[in-house]
Image (cartoon, rainbow, N blue to C red; front, side):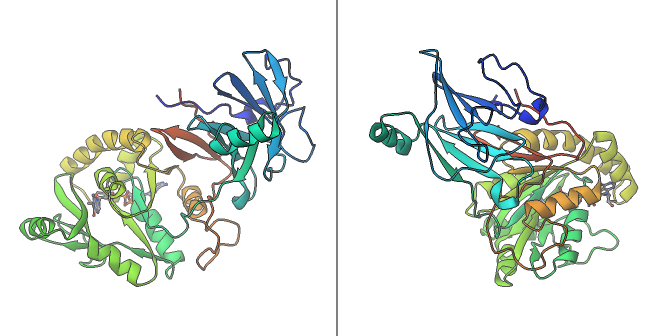
Length: 363
Ligand SMILES: Nc1ncnc2c1ncn2[C@@H]1O[C@H](COP(=O)(O)OP(=O)(O)OP(=O)(O)O)[C@@H](O)[C@H]1O
Ligand SMILES: Nc1nc2c(ncn2[C@@H]2O[C@H](COP(=O)(O)O)[C@@H](O)[C@H]2O)c(=O)[nH]1
């Protein structure tokens, strides 16, 4: 499995015996890089208003205070730290402002190696994390009945000028209220297969016994309207889009339990018993892949609809007590306060949980 986050320090706020002979405030993380342990935060900070760094050299048994380059994050009461590429540590700061929560500490990059030669000391360098995700298309996946459509409808209703739905093609029959061209392009299998053969689809998959697919035209229609495209597709489709030219944000919606998923599917009353059972069987594999395949950037748990919607809005840069109604101008990662960051198959995954759930640690 991938490496575990170095530490989730908010479990340790009453202080602890850290085994390094360090006087602990309980806000440190310890990250091993080769022979060195980087201690971020803590009692020996070089200043009370910023996050301090100390290095424990295991080969000499000595502590070193490095030269710190770059602008540092302000002091924080909780953060997690994850080593990336053996040369930088990603710091996720809890409870900070959206544009101030992700930082990188370079510890062994080419730049740092150069600076070490110049300074003749240990060197680390801070930089602030900023991503270009704010305008990317949004791929939403998750097992049938988890609430994808419900969440997307809420988003489209609240932000009609910001988001546009990619209308998929499907060979399944329309449900009672579904309109052709609005919910789906309902189509014959031979027509769709022919269009697939002629390269008209960005992705397609056989889902619960029917053919579903996103046409290139569907995505382009949204882009032409100047809106941010939302795709509601299954995990196979998400995998294909991940491998395609479309640079999107991938969000997986997870149910609180299989029992709850079954109740939602049954309560919706749109499927026959056979179809419900088929969808539930498929759900287990989808959840497994959603959580561990590395396709998804974010995993949201839809236990409480309002909470999940709030978290979705925050991920999309629409958070805050007064929702922003126009496109956000800054492109930043915007995780909610109840998040943890994990590394799956070398990709960073932000896991957003119910407010009172414990933070999961991967082993
Ligand atoms: N958090 C929630 N708590 C309880 N019920 C919910 C919640 N979220 C959604 N639902 C209900 O669950 C049912 C399934 O939701 P929805 O149709 O949005 O699922 P879906 O993921 O889009 O499914 P499909 O992939 O089959 O289209 C709906 O009746 C919806 O009202
Ligand atoms: N790969 C794709 N999957 C799609 C697409 N459109 C919808 N879906 C997924 O199918 C299931 C079932 O949907 P339903 O409307 O029959 O309940 C669900 O998981 C959708 O996300 C698509 O274009 N490609």
